Length: 377
Image 1 (tube, rainbow, N blue to C red):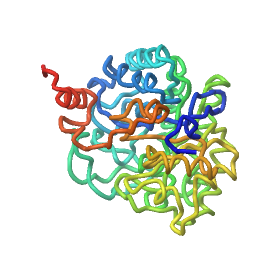
Image 2: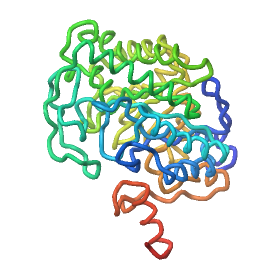
Image 3: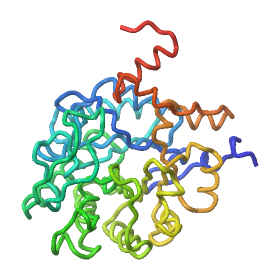
Image 4: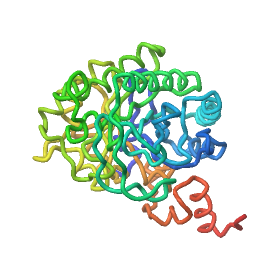
């Protein structure tokens, strides 16, 4: 069988908890910094997400929305979900996606120590993040500062923020949410021993360090409808530490995966950073974490990292390493990637020229218009 044929396993229907999806392709959450200054999603965002549905993606995971107005925001013009106006903006997005025949869930995120907006970020411990702030996501620049260690009340506020955002997401018409415990953001800061120097109940053992994420999942499940999908995103690597691996390998993975499964997660989305699927979805000694998560929890697993390559996608699915494939940057300039595979058309190679006018949706539209020779306003 040709991996480019309409019978490619990525084009087969799949089930994610209560959602029956037409294929295994998922749009990965990608920060586009395109909301208003007050974090309200725009009409441009509605059109942007709807075109993934038109292009055949089985599921869309919308970019991370911050969960409280004080400490959660990561970057400028990030969408939030903690006000009525933000909820109304997201409702326009979900309605556009559903009209196009798609399904959409929302990633919920708290930046913690790596906020580029909050002047004095809150984090598990007063540990300065490695690396520098990301270009193009302002307003702040340069090295990260040292955050303030969170109090017990701060932790309760974080949990309440995630839960209220999930309830709002359900009201806004989303099919579910994804709790972001990956890539060096707050919940991953709790999970990571170098950034979590606390004692119990949320520090010390790995069971304690994953506890906050598990409690958030459980609380969201209790506060939302039974058919509302609640999943989790995990990763080893961080945006500022691309070569980070879980210290205990499969032993750590077993405790992490079991904790989120027992909390009620409907799926595990395992994220990769710049070096791709084979590098970041394995332990430091080469054991597949996607396969291990699937085998030990029985949950559907979404893999990530260069899986727009039909040969790699074919292998990951047929080897039983994952159930779904999250496509990030390659989806930006191939919003019709599933339709391309079904009809034998090659995807366009991703180019960072797409960000010539910034990381926003409007910047991408300007770049695309230039490529098509359209007049620019």
